[in-house]
Length: 215
Image (cartoon, rainbow, N blue to C red):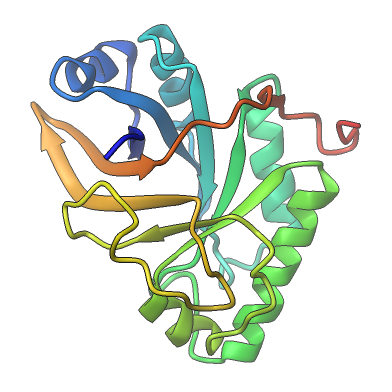
């Protein structure tokens, strides 16, 4: 099937490391972790700069939230945005998957936290999307349909770079991107593999300072 594949990373991934991946896989885009539960991911800038230096022009970022870190959703987005200042990217994905340091068992509270994260990101003119799976969404949000107007990046590690497996959930009837392979490692470079039917044509946005949203 036509489309583009890309890699998402959370560890520092330099130009040389991206080139290692590109020597084996025709990755056309990168998704870099910008925030993890304890705060801004210090590897984000290295990984974004490395991807661009290796020739990858399309970059997204994702936010692995820390609801129990004592840092409010707005403060998390502010810290993440500050770190990304001067860097350009397309989507800002909010990660919704089971993890001890992120989401609890109170689905109403989880939905509230997610809504606050999304609103804080949108207030900074970020193009927000949701990363999750059908089972994770049911467990964490109680299958709410509140966010179905946002782009969906879903994960299903079936090693198939297509949407043939997708079944509607959470109000989403069509996804934007799929993570089809996880925990890959090539010569010490860790990555997950993703597929998208086509890359957006829109111009990438440059992350503004938190106090000065982009118009």
